Image (cartoon, rainbow, N blue to C red; front, side, top):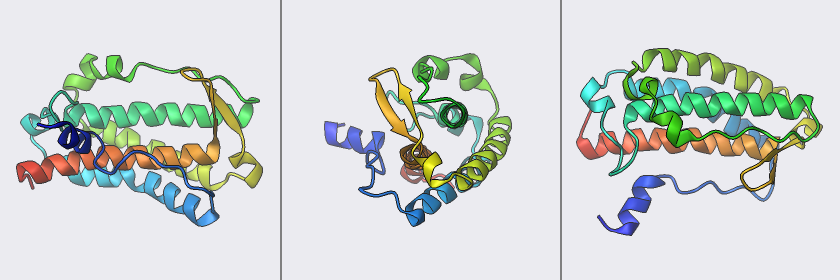
Amino acid sequence: MNELDLEKLKYPIGKFTAPDQYSAEYLSEKITEIETLPEKLTIEAIHLTDEQLDTPYRPGGWTVRQVIHHCAESHMNCYVRLKWALTENNPVIKPYDEVLWSELSDNLTMPIQPTLDLLKGLHFRLGYIMRSLSTSDLEKTFIHPSDNSEIKLKRMIGMYAWHGNHHLAHITSLKNHKNWK
């Protein structure tokens, strides 16, 4: 497999690109994508066998099971970061090692249904609070210590919508490649 093919498998929808302007329409669309991710993941993954769930979406990549559990873990962090940014002045968030988390036994062996259930409630809450954000709330920030970048909540909405779609595309691309229903 050449480098270009591997890059397409890693980023089937491309890398996140921030818009020049965060219009109300853009933010509403991204929040809808966040709200509907659990249903889309469920439709794509609930009928997969354990063997299919334990198939990596690319050589050296996570399995479908790990991708689903990772979405919940990442988006739980999103929720906490959102709350911190709304209640503290430009907090420094705590990063986590998603690779090490993905290698824990729950991510490797746990059924996906409890995680899909968690995502359903979590994404309802994310959508609910995101839709209530004022213009000034959308400008609130947190600091990511990996590179000391300041992230505005409006950017975070776009990033996490992309993140969910990115991992959903890992699953749908694998299913298409393998001719799974």
